Every structure is written in structure tokens, then in C-alpha cells.
Length: 240
Image 1 (cartoon, one colour):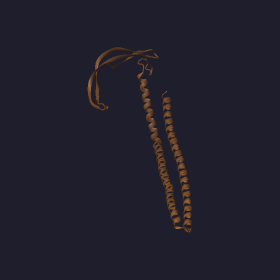
Image 2: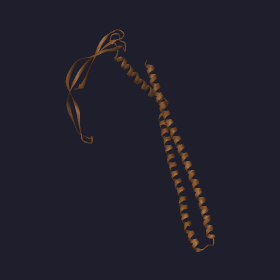
Image 3: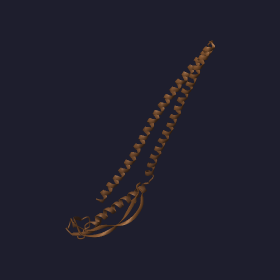
Image 4: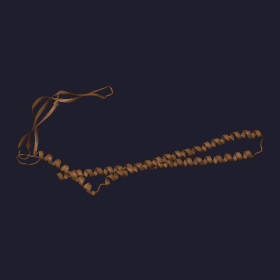
């Protein structure tokens, strides 16, 4: 029976360690998938920004060509003055449009770097948890399991020895039949009192005597093998 319980406990501990490692692996896979999705999004956004920048450059080249053609035309001074103002405004607008995609690309690069750092940190944490468990040698693991099984064996033997029959000398033979209160006695116990303010902070502590009662019990037992009977005495203090 003891060997079976020890085997069951060892199997449970092994199963718990395996589940913990599987959970860590699943968490690592999830973080990697999230990082890959974020990387794809960042790549798509950067491609869109590049396409916008190319369109803006093409548009700016067209505007420059139009401005050159207008400058080559031998028109009157009034016409040149009227045409110079819109071209200058268009050039300022085009430069602002060119600068906007560059800013978006820089922001996306920063978010990509932050995501990459987070991914590396999660990998380091998962590796550290695995290394902590795997760093133990086989001898250390064997010693730990021997200690655990030894403690379990001691607890089981102590529990069985307490139920030993004094007549037939068999362990784990005595069974409880009934429990009765045979006597009671008034007494006083000391309790620590606390005074708190409106904020819930303790501002004062003192000791006070409180009336109580000691109850004496008698637990009757009987051996399941030979029928031997005995009783155990116990007491309990209860505040009134």
C-alpha cells in the first residue's frame, strides 16, 4: 500500500512538471505567433508608406516639369506673377507630403524594434525556466525524490502506529466508536485588542482577559480484529 501511494505521488509530481513545461512551451509559441503577426503588419504598413512616398515623388517630378514648362513660356509679367504663387504653394505642400511618409516609416521601425526586444525577452525567460529544471543532475533529482518519498513514508507509518492495538499489536486496527464530553471547566483566556482610526490604521493595542470554557472529551475506540476497547482523552478551549 505504501509503495502504491508513493508511486502515485511520484507520477503526479512528474505529470505536474510535464504540464508546467508544456504550458511554458505553449506560451512561448503564442508569443512567437503574435510577434510574427505584428511583424507582418509592420511590413505591410512600411510597404504602404513606401508606395505613398513613391507616388509623392512621381507627383513632385510632374509638378517640377510643369513649372519648368511654365517658366520657358514667354508670357507677360502678370501671367508669370499669377503662376508663381500657386507653384510655390504646391511645392511646400509636396515637401510636407514627402516628409509625412518618412515620419511614418520611422515610427513603424521603432515599433518593430520594441516588438523584437519583447520577443527576445520572452525567449530568454522560457530558456531560463527550462535551464533551472534541467540544470539539476540525475543524482540531485534522485536525492530530492528519495527525501520526498521518505517523508511520505514517515507520515504514513506514524498515522498507522497511532492506531495500533495494545492487545493484538496490529497497526491501524483501532476504530473510533463514539466521542463524549465528560467534564467542563470555566477559565480565562487573554486576547489582544486593537483600536483603529477612521482610515483603518491601528493606533492602540492592549491585552484583555475574556471568559472561556475548557471542555474535556473522551473518544472510545475498538479494535477491528480482536475487539479490544480503550479510550483517548482530549480537551478544547472555547471562548464564551
